[in-house]
Image (cartoon, rainbow, N blue to C red; front, side, top):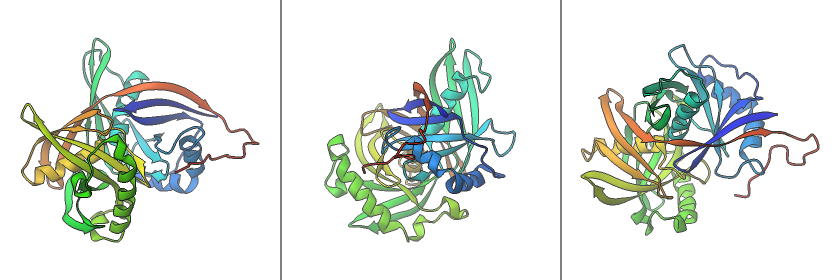
Length: 321
């Protein structure tokens, strides 16, 4: 039996596995990711695929941190494997840690939940008032520009890193706008763009090969400013055609790296394809790039005990796309 606590962050699901998974060996969270990919992929698929999940499911295994400076580690997964970063998941983990008593939190003020993830150390800053969680700020690893104006599949993409590598493409360059009715078209374009960038130098992480590869394609629209703050609407298609319902936390950081590098903004109101919103800002410039903060909120949706019947003909589930 596997137990989980489920959340959504800005509409995007996040399933936290709380029991039933064996210890995952490794000296670091990045090493544990490699172990999980080799040894626990059946568990990932059982929890993520139909009939217990769906083609756009997301979740994590909790693991020990790299050192006592973090509260715990997290191995993020989706329908196609294990990701290196997840901003919406980090926001959900902040809520989870406070609500489930994994960290001590005063009823008023900010509680920092420090988490080691494959891309590095991140923080969920959980804001409470009278014991109620009002919001979470995701503080990411350094984000930076990798390449500009890369020709791929008839468009030009800007490539940047926000814990994972993202290619940013203007939706208008495809004759589209970021709306739910165009999601299928965006999925098809994202698959072609990712394939087109697979062997490109911009898809390589500069120092850690296990962080290489374009993880997601961000299609965006420019929107009118809000109180002088830049606004964009995006749909992020990651893995093999998985659609982010949120504005994408690590993707938002990758967008901020591009905007900051161009001298265009230090703040961004980032909307998703379903209308949810993250607010982002550059916290500081560092040698590697910029530290980006992303404001959001997660909500618990349920608790589950999953079972696998020995006679089940679909022991690790399936997906129809």
